[in-house]
Length: 78
Image 1 (cartoon, rainbow, N blue to C red):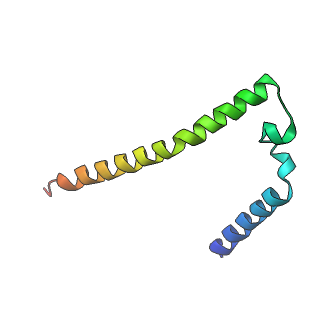
Image 2 (cartoon, one colour):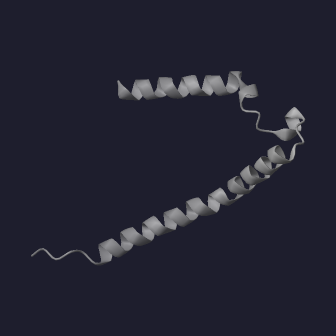
Image 3 (spheres, helix red, strand yellow):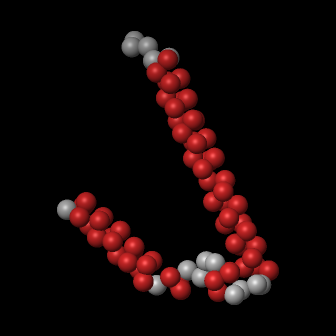
Protein backbone atom coordinates (compact mmCIF):
# COMPACT_ATOMS: atom_id res chain seq x y z
CA UNK A 1 0.00 0.00 0.00
CA UNK A 2 2.80 2.41 0.90
CA UNK A 3 4.66 1.59 -2.29
CA UNK A 4 1.56 2.26 -4.40
CA UNK A 5 1.03 5.58 -2.64
CA UNK A 6 4.65 6.54 -3.27
CA UNK A 7 4.40 5.66 -6.96
CA UNK A 8 1.19 7.66 -7.26
CA UNK A 9 2.81 10.66 -5.55
CA UNK A 10 5.83 10.53 -7.88
CA UNK A 11 3.54 10.17 -10.91
CA UNK A 12 1.53 13.24 -9.89
CA UNK A 13 4.69 15.31 -9.34
CA UNK A 14 6.14 14.23 -12.69
CA UNK A 15 2.91 15.13 -14.49
CA UNK A 16 2.91 18.55 -12.86
CA UNK A 17 6.50 19.17 -13.89
CA UNK A 18 5.85 18.05 -17.45
CA UNK A 19 2.57 19.89 -17.91
CA UNK A 20 3.38 23.13 -16.07
CA UNK A 21 6.98 24.05 -16.94
CA UNK A 22 6.22 27.76 -16.91
CA UNK A 23 5.96 27.61 -13.13
CA UNK A 24 9.68 26.89 -12.84
CA UNK A 25 10.96 29.87 -14.86
CA UNK A 26 14.40 28.34 -14.55
CA UNK A 27 16.11 29.39 -17.76
CA UNK A 28 16.84 33.09 -18.35
CA UNK A 29 17.54 32.38 -22.00
CA UNK A 30 14.12 30.84 -22.57
CA UNK A 31 12.22 33.55 -20.78
CA UNK A 32 14.26 36.55 -21.89
CA UNK A 33 15.18 37.71 -18.41
CA UNK A 34 18.41 39.65 -18.24
CA UNK A 35 18.17 41.14 -14.77
CA UNK A 36 21.29 40.83 -12.64
CA UNK A 37 19.54 38.80 -9.92
CA UNK A 38 18.19 36.18 -12.34
CA UNK A 39 21.52 35.78 -14.11
CA UNK A 40 23.41 35.44 -10.82
CA UNK A 41 20.94 32.79 -9.68
CA UNK A 42 21.38 30.97 -12.99
CA UNK A 43 25.17 31.00 -12.63
CA UNK A 44 24.97 29.86 -9.01
CA UNK A 45 22.71 26.94 -9.90
CA UNK A 46 25.02 25.95 -12.78
CA UNK A 47 27.99 26.02 -10.39
CA UNK A 48 26.09 23.95 -7.83
CA UNK A 49 25.12 21.33 -10.41
CA UNK A 50 28.69 21.21 -11.71
CA UNK A 51 30.10 20.56 -8.23
CA UNK A 52 27.37 18.15 -7.14
CA UNK A 53 29.00 14.99 -8.60
CA UNK A 54 32.20 15.71 -6.67
CA UNK A 55 30.19 16.01 -3.46
CA UNK A 56 28.42 12.72 -4.11
CA UNK A 57 31.73 10.96 -4.79
CA UNK A 58 33.23 12.46 -1.63
CA UNK A 59 30.27 11.24 0.46
CA UNK A 60 30.58 7.73 -1.00
CA UNK A 61 34.30 7.68 -0.18
CA UNK A 62 33.60 8.87 3.38
CA UNK A 63 30.93 6.24 3.94
CA UNK A 64 33.13 3.45 2.58
CA UNK A 65 36.08 4.67 4.59
CA UNK A 66 34.12 4.90 7.84
CA UNK A 67 32.49 1.50 7.34
CA UNK A 68 35.86 -0.11 6.62
CA UNK A 69 37.42 1.45 9.72
CA UNK A 70 34.48 0.24 11.82
CA UNK A 71 34.93 -3.29 10.48
CA UNK A 72 38.68 -3.23 11.07
CA UNK A 73 38.28 -2.38 14.78
CA UNK A 74 35.31 -4.38 16.12
CA UNK A 75 34.24 -3.58 19.69
CA UNK A 76 35.28 -5.98 22.45
CA UNK A 77 32.64 -8.46 23.55
CA UNK A 78 33.20 -8.04 27.31
